[in-house]
Amino acid sequence: MFGIGTSELLLILLIALIVLGPKEIPKVARTLGRAMREFQRATDELRRTIDMEIENDERASTKPSENKAEEMKDEIKKEENKTSNSDLETKEKTPF
Image 1 (cartoon, rainbow, N blue to C red):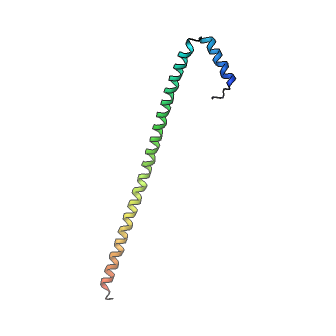
Image 2: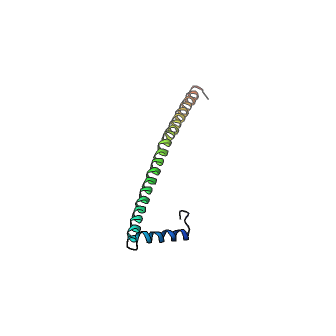
Image 3: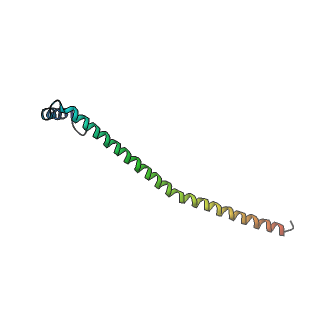
């Protein structure tokens, strides 16, 4: 936990007990707990926002490529129709 060992943590708690007194330590602990909780909520919200923005950017960047793929499919179908129409015309002209 933050690179603090057990003995160091006990020393910090002892100093806090001497400086603040036994009546103030629970109040300070509650205040620190609330602040830590609020900080965690803020970081979670920021993380969610960043993830949503990344996802939106990925969607936006893939849509043009999907549209290009659809356009290419349409062009291929048009070419196939042209070749099949020209094949039909050729077959109609030949007596075989």
